[in-house]
Amino acid sequence: MPRDMIASRVHLDEFLGPFDCQLDPRNRWNGWMSPYFTLGVARELSAQTIRMAERDGYDCVDTIHVLEGRADSRDTVHIIQSDVKRRTDEEDDPDPEPLAIAIRVNWRDLHKGAEQATTIAAATRAARKAARRRKPNGKGATRTVVVHIRWQWAEESHTATNVIEPNRDGLYGIGGWEWTWSSEVWWCPRCGSYEEWHDTECVCGLTRPATLLGVATWTAACVLHDRAPEATSALVDLTNLATICSVAGEDEIDTAEDTGPFDTETLGKADEVLRRALDTATPADLAAAGWEPVPDEKSDRLYRITFPAARTN
Image 1: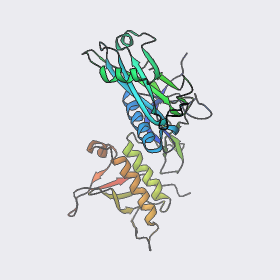
Image 2: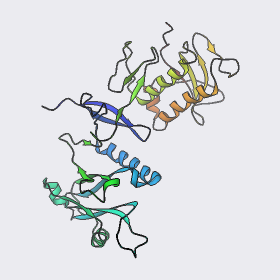
Image 3: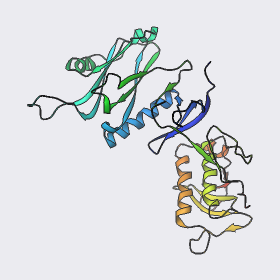
Image 4: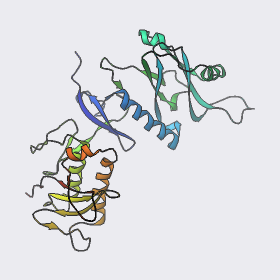
């Protein structure tokens, strides 16, 4: 019987993510998670791996690729090329071609559930010609193939490239039992402890906010509590980049670096936490996270954010 899957968020060090996912927190590989992603998240993950490979070199990065066709499309060939030079024994070939993979998809067979609808091979001249000549067509339902390429081993192992099949819920297990996926964590501003994302209640009894911006608000609170445990709210100006203008507890807390409890690094860290979350936030997210507009003559984008007071004992 399959184990229960729950909603969570994962990241891979500072390289990939965080991504929404489904996972079984008991099903771990050396302590690491084995997440499953929707197709939409798989596309985002794919884009991040390709950007990493282009920045750092394909020889040290696995890449994920999402190929698209139609249920009634003719078969197509897709060439995925790296910057890794193909090994060759030819002495008169001082500049060998980059290593590339050819993926042929029979979209009609894929739609029917055939096991061998996708084939993987080295990118020969004939394969490159076929890729240029045959593009996906048809008007049927969209079909996708998700491919994982391990470029470090791609030239010496036929298993270095594989198709990731969706599970019965249509989710893709990418990097499970192979990559060091960690659960995203959230910090409790009241007691200072942290919990894995899927553990929605802290040991002290507080429940995690439902929105990412709400979590970022609490994370900024934890940053402020490190210097001022009595802080319960802050004013944030969104005119340019999110900037904390003032912090309050029972009374306003001095934010001047020379005379108050905060330094520039602490306030800057809290600002950055909020800015990252605001990159994808909508006005509805502001309201859901409890951000309250504050009337002000100088700015129409001033908000008060609140958070639980930290325990002082």
